[in-house]
Image 1 (cartoon, rainbow, N blue to C red):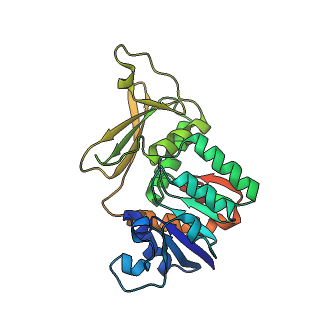
Image 2 (spheres, rainbow, N blue to C red):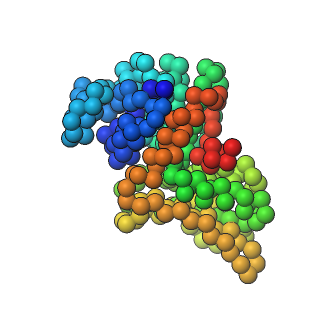
Length: 261
């Protein structure tokens, strides 16, 4: 039985995940972190009957007796949360987007230094993981690709964690063949992330969608994942990671990594 703390437990994904942990075999929801509900019971904070799960204002206060921290907070806070948990001997599952490759390198070094595991995914949806696995396979054979990152108008970080992770994982397969320079403003070509051009759209009606387009002369292949309007798709993958992380050392990136082992 692994005891779990959820940081961001009253948020959109965190509240759905809390229900998932409560119903899961082999996991116990020990504590939660949410500054707006600090000092309350999580059930009460979610408008339900008490659950016997205390809510704390900081991660540091919530880690007593915890084996795994699951973080669904913000890109400003997640790195500090992960490092604080590792310092306390707690494994980490990161579902929050916005971390850079350098951030992940620092987290990996801290995890290895403590002999602990960290699992991070830009998207813990099982179908998103399958889309990423397919893209990595295609990249072995097709040398030209770009990524389009779609999200809601209110999403602050660009590109999304899903798109950034995809670009960085593709870079581990091979570098894309460069395209011809285009006259005009260079920013019209999007941002270069680990060698891949990534174009971020922020518009109403999107939640998170990620598309990678591969091209050859006279043909194209598009692999796209679209998320719906609820957090339900992210629960099963996060629970899988929470069960797996205690047996690992260092950083594992991508839910597809777990699924393909």
